[in-house]
Figure 1 (cartoon, rainbow over the protein chains, first blue to last red):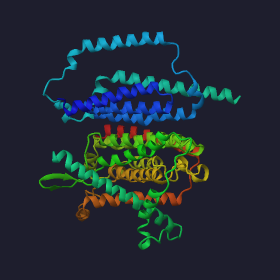
Figure 2: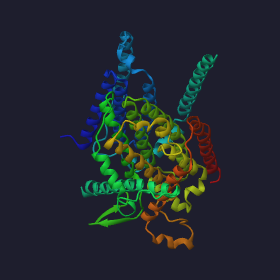
Figure 3: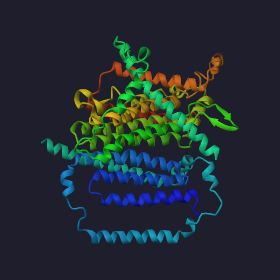
Length: 177
Length: 341
């Protein structure tokens, strides 16, 4: 007999994986985008089950509200008539398989080595995560323990933004001539 | 069992009905106020002073023919209004209407559905979903004007969301919490509304709030003089009514957040002044509604007063003025909080 939590988890997980498959098999990119949104929502639901409320909210704000809106924005400007006639899968499958196998081995190793961390203590709720403020904990860890990686990541994003602006600007000026 | 299922269910039904009625009479209020500002009478025929007009409108919209354009993506065309409507109503689950509580059959009942520890983030997350329905509805209509309208809407909402987020952060620097109830309680403890402490954040929030709800003077996604009716041009009958409901529910929502974050939620004005203590006789819920209706009146007032922005002006105001000012405000507030402690 499964508990309510387990039923919820499997429902979310199954929907997430199924819609992830739908993302890569749909012919219409807008439908793919919608299925991707469904997947992201289910992942947010799983975060909620782990009592990571902050992460769940940020997942929806950043991915669904920001990135997916921009995806749809771009898709709408693309000519869908010509796109639907193009080949769905290109011929680089041997490289793709190589990369996938490497990634699979990597994930496998991580899970195998961290087996102990996956086993939750039975019948013992994670009291510290339930009682204290989740966002506060995340903030303390992010800005004290992982300060340097955090700063490096934000610096990388800044570089990417400036890069994108320069690339876009250059094309604009050459078109103008 | 009763505590976790029955009470929340009753609360959800009550809030849903209350918001629906508020939305219906918001349309009446808007038509009346705009009419008076233009020296007209507004709706007068249905009921006393036109009071039954919203009901007549609702009946009309429901019995109208439901048209789906020939080249439309049927599934997404149907989903669009629903995607916009559901988050617009769902966010009311974390709005604290009043801090007081009463007991029914021995169970404590609050005047809000729930208080989650990421309240304001939950609201921002859900309200960012609403724009998806607008984009998808405009795209799936397979028509030029709706597509242009939804493109504008996407660009506008993504741009103004950033400045709005920063103005919310400037308040959170004082509260040390994301919970909506505790944000109001923080204002009670400080003795000041955050609109007094954070005037820049408050004004930025107001401007962004109007832009986020696609209302005049930021109503470019549905500019009737250039885009017919914008993203909902092809929608008719009940589906159109859903978009309409969502827009007005969002106005009430943005007003409620403004009241909670900046105007002390259910608190009476100047909670720390002894001479004004008699104001606390009036229940918190009434104060909350009064403040919300002030902001709703402001929406109508703006619509009747200001002409529409041009598209490039809209983007310039958003990116080159509001976002830098909001960021500077957050940094300044953070520095002041750190060194004046």
